[in-house]
Image (cartoon, rainbow, N blue to C red; front, side, top):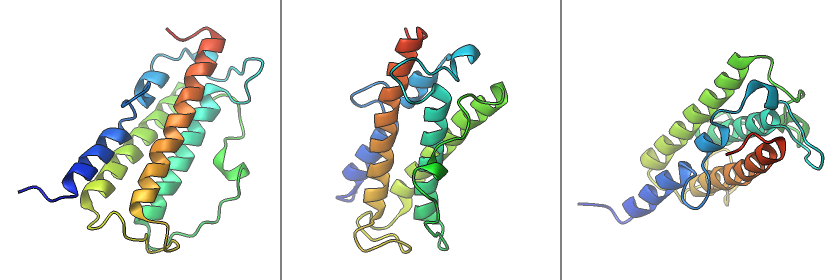
Length: 160
């Protein structure tokens, strides 16, 4: 027998794939040529690499917040959430960042599936900082920056 919250959990898991109503993370980053990863066309503030790394850093921070009983919010906005370089050091850095995002996304799925009460406060947070809130922030944050990735890729002429 399904629990009443199973439908909510299923919906959150689908949202974490980021393809409900827009291009998903995987498609937005598929086949970005090496020469474009550090490109920043006029009118854009961030390169594909910077957006990818920002997604990774933010998502891993939210995951750490949910899982680490000793979590302390000691990052400074915006400096600690954006990479210092416009381009990845090499193909491995690019691939590793994508893989890290995929891993942390899967770990967020496990949070959704395993936390007894998604509306419970995360122990290291304030009363309104629930597991549900953290997952929804992750979904919203990635969706926003995926849109930026697509726009930057179009401007760089590497989107089809």
